[in-house]
Structure formats: structure tokens, C-alpha cells
Image (cartoon, rainbow, N blue to C red; front, side, top):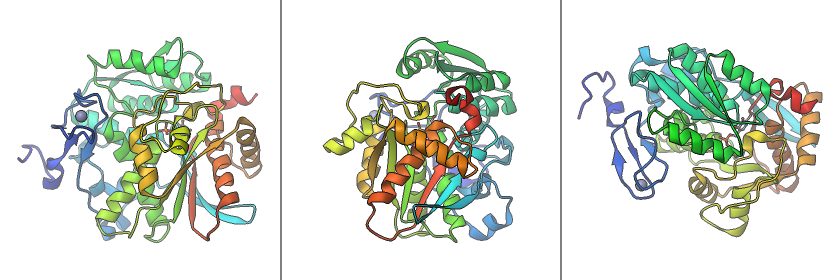
Length: 380
Ligand SMILES: Cc1ncc(COP(=O)(O)O)c(C=O)c1O
Ligand SMILES: [Zn+2]
């Protein structure tokens, strides 16, 4: 059925669907998970009109027909995206690294936030809640500020002050939760029974923002896909966005295959690494230890099953890196002119590990996801 206000016919076929029990739901701001308890995905058919794309500004909104927002007037943009893809050589191996710490709020989370909060605006939502280790909260808070949407951000008590101050600077209400990151999520979910949940891990509109990473890489590599991507995994919102983006390009006939996806976790909190090593289809509970890479310290990834499926489907793998390896990578990137946060250094430590054992010639893309300015206290 055609949406009365819909100006773009194809987008009106969108709906949420559950890959666990195969139920589907109309799009609504209050719907953030399936009645069976599983996460939801979005059914959506993107288009890639290359001539039109080339005429547009270098922002992630240049892939307009591939982003599920109906009306131009709903779009909240700070001209974000189209980050540089810089060549960096590690131990004689050429790689391409995407500079996603150069987003307005200092992390790649703006990719997801610009799309998810544009959708919330389109729905006429007045207030949202979100929980985060800091960066997603900052991004959601910033775009809510642009939209005039009130927001409440739940973070663990020990979140670095650089991130909590940033969230408050955008005018959001900050709620610090005693206990773990998982406890923080529980408290936010309780609040989400009354207020729309702008969750980066549950809401699939966030992934339809992070997928623009794939489109940009495709364009920056002269409309080709790389062989491999090495990406961080906490909840996997960049990882799954990249998988979604390349799957969409493949389905549209733009590339031949989805690249191999290699995920990186901190050895101190590595539920998906453990599941991958043991051949499990779902992560199981783990003992979480302290890590400097707080952004990927996720003991219970919401979309764990989906991440493991993507790893197997693309013939990828998951690597775990130690605190020492993260520290070395952090220093090395600083000496190369990139001041990044420890979570981003973990990805580089994983990339270096991957390069050591690879046996074939291949094009490899990785990323720097967050600025070091977010972790000054920790580094001190
Ligand atoms: C800088 C940075 N990199 C990577 C990640 C990992 O993102 P995800 O949890 O979606 O896998 C995060 C998450 O907070 C982050 O802040
Ligand atoms: Zn279901």
C-alpha cells in the first residue's frame, strides 16, 4: 500500500522483519525488537544512480536513494561522511584506512545517528532514550540537538568524562548507571517501554547509516570492493552496516561479491572471538576483564548471531588483541599523525595481526573510528 505522504514509491514497501521467527511489523518508532525477543532488520530496496551520486556533495547523503528516509526535509545533516581513505603501509604491507574519527562528533557513530535521528524526526518523535559506552550517546545527542528532540543518554558510571561532557554539551540528559555496560542497557530498556529507543544496536535504521561506509569505500576504490575489511566489533554496528552495504551493492549488481569481513575484539572481552573459535552460532556468557578499549567491551552483543553468520558467509574471521598490542598500536598511530582513541588502536592491532598471517595478495581496508581527544584522561 502506498503511504499517503510518500514521494518515493519504492521506500514505502519498507517494514521491520525478524530473521529468527520470520514475523514482520510496520515501521513504528516504539517497535525496537520482535515479540520473540530477537533484534529486527529492515526490508528496503536501495538504488545506486551513479551519475546522480557523482553530482552531489561529498557527504554520506550522496547515496540518497540507498538511505531509507522518505522526505528531504527530514534529513538532519552536518555534511558528514565521505571521510578520506588513506594509504598506510604496515611492515611493507599496503593498506587503505578510512578516517572515520573525522566526523562532527569525533567518531563513526555519526553515520548511524544522522540516519536514525532523521527517521525519528520524520516520525514526529519528541523524545528518545539511548544507552552507550559514550560515542553513540554523543552522536545521538548531537543529532537530537539539531532536530530539537529531547534525549536521555544512559552511560556506565566509569565512562570517560570527555564523552559525558560532550553528551551534556549537546543538551542531553545524562544518566550514569552504577555497574556494568550490560546493566546500563537494562536500565535504558526499561525507560524504552515509554519513550522511543534510539538504540544503535537494536534499531536497524542505525545500520542503514553505518552501511554508507561500504558505499564510500566502493566509490573511493573506483567503484570496486576490496578483498578484505578489518573492523572493530563491540555490538558490531559498523561491522554489520558494512556487511549490509556490500550486500546491497551485490544485490544491485554493482559488485561481484561481499568482501571477507574480519572482526577485532579486545582479548579482555571477546565473546564473539570465543564463539568463532569454538564454532558456535551464538556467543555465550563470558567473564569480562578491564580493557582500555571501552568502545568494544561488550559482553553480550545484541546481534551476536548475525555477526557470526556474516563472518561465516564471507569466509572471514575474528581476532583478539591484548592490552599490550593495543598500547603499541596507539603509540604507532600517534607517530604517524593520527591521534585516536584506544578502541580504534585495537582495530589497528588486529589489522597488524591479520597482516602477519595473511598468505595472499589482497586489497585490505580498515578504519580509525574515534578521536584520541575522547580518551585523554585514560591516556594520561
Ligand atoms: C571508537 C569506537 N570504535 C568502535 C566501536 C565499536 O562499535 P560497535 O559496538 O558498534 O561494534 C565503538 C563503540 O562504541 C567506538 O566508540
Ligand atoms: Zn522474532
